[in-house]
Length: 83
Image (cartoon, rainbow, N blue to C red; front, top):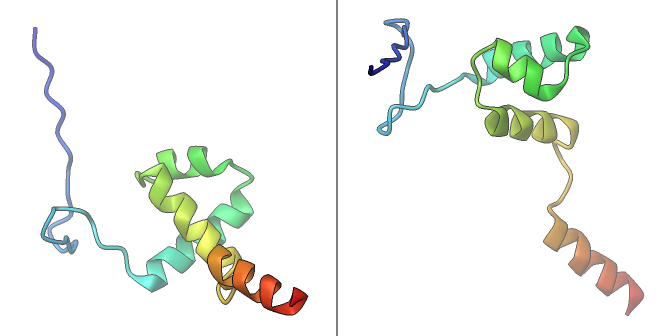
């Protein structure tokens, strides 16, 4: 017996060329705020809101460190300071 999964998609929802949903910065901010109040783990929150966990985790990380330099930049700056 074959099972078929069907995803219901809002007609006005934007998608990229690969069919992935595009979430506006405003909507991401709303979801991150709701996550902060929820008390759920990232995985639980992402699952309940239909978001791929890896995508949601990257939003959370970016939100926590909006202006932080990446690891390579930190490493270079540390080496320069020690020289």
